[in-house]
Length: 168
Image 1 (tube, rainbow, N blue to C red):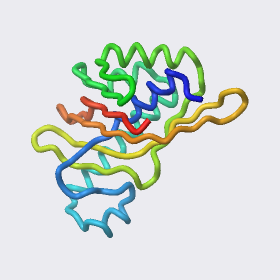
Image 2 (cartoon, rainbow, N blue to C red):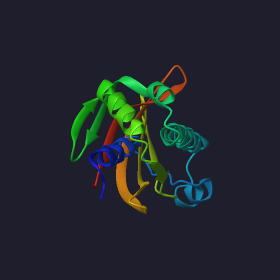
Image 3 (cartoon, rainbow, N blue to C red):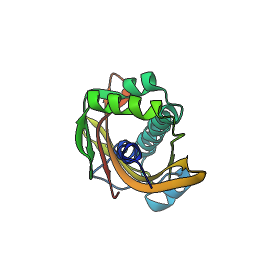
């Protein structure tokens, strides 16, 4: 059974994805081209956000709190369907407590689930599905959840400004 920390974590992971009011890009270049046949700019945005997502969750999986701090905007809003809304500071505090528990929690993006949409003059929206897992009482405990991350690009750097984690 997931602990409240794991529930929070699933919420965290969920709000690390993005949205966009255009066509959807899937996780691979090949399937992206087949589905949409979109422009090089669309592929570039998808690649940038897919990489930003990878960096974000590599830091999460390595419990690198300092790196995670640098990947969120200071006005971060993290929405979780069962735990409510938390700020940047609360998110960092929750991550610190979670990492101190040393649950071995890992996040994995479900292959092909990432969708990326541009947000004019702001950044991008990413949506997807991810799996959080850890071992508890000698057994692997896994949960699959949905997320929306709104990424802001400032001075060439992508940071998560809004996270929506749901379907818990």
